[in-house]
Image 1: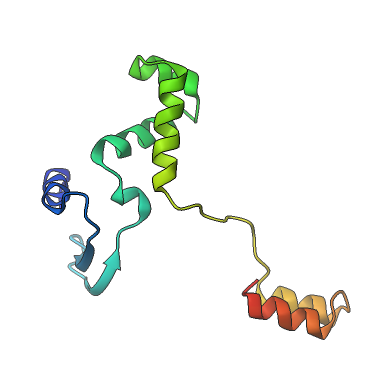
Image 2: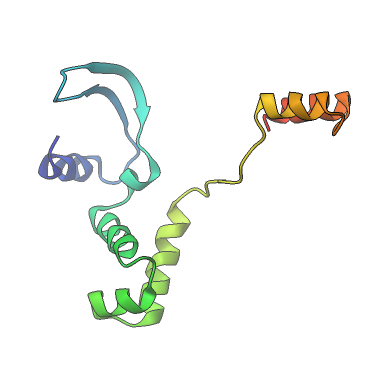
Length: 123
């Protein structure tokens, strides 16, 4: 799917949520079928995706964004806040793996009860 057909699909969907049922990798011809939700950034409008892309390319510099778009600091901040409000927060804190928890238990750094709790939490 090229950018034009992607934009047409988003226009037809009129910002309603939709699910992709089939993906074909054009290079290999491999097809994956099943319901797939779009990642959060793909759900943004084309303009918001361009804004986020520019923000990343400007290394998060609002001052550079002001120059690039020719608007004020508050305008950039308001747009970032609006986009951020539509995106789910992603927790990137590292979690303990099962092996790390078992290693801590073996070394006596945590009790068996603590290990069980950590494993239940998925940490």
